[in-house]
Length: 183
Image 1: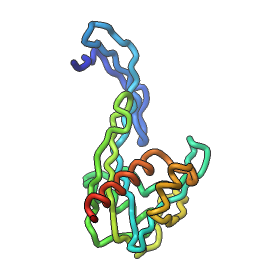
Image 2: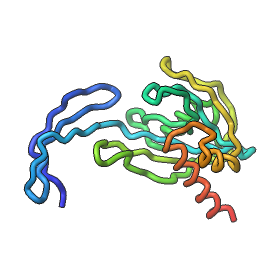
Image 3: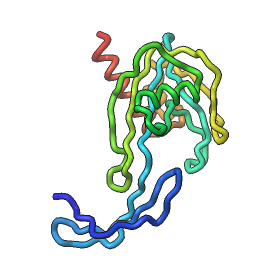
Image 4: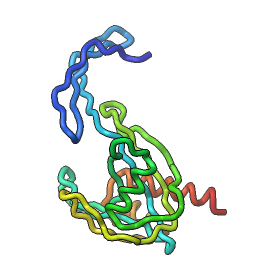
């Protein structure tokens, strides 16, 4: 059975997300007076593979992680933008790469449904090629790196590239998709 929300108040609101404090009643009657929920926007990402079978990765500093990470292109969708349009835009802005092939949706997942409201929509983009220069926001400093698709699984398993969970799961989802659809 679902929980019943008895009260809800915002503790903090910002363009990056909101923090909400709820008072919840559980099905057994127990009341949790302070249950904190992080409200974030949905975002999109894509494992992008070039015609030469290279994965397009972006290297950027991540403040909370305190280091530089190689990740797949990703970002929040803009107002009135579809998820597919959002990842195409993010790819072009962050890397200058495009593809004439339509993005393939690999999955849609809640990030952390225990405390967060957002989901991530993951795509596979194939036959990508560099067509433009990067078009970065003022707060972005991104280097584009190409990594051989066939070597990436070993690099992830052996922690040879510093990355985050969403890049790893997108790689393995793409690998499975390609194995099933390219016999």
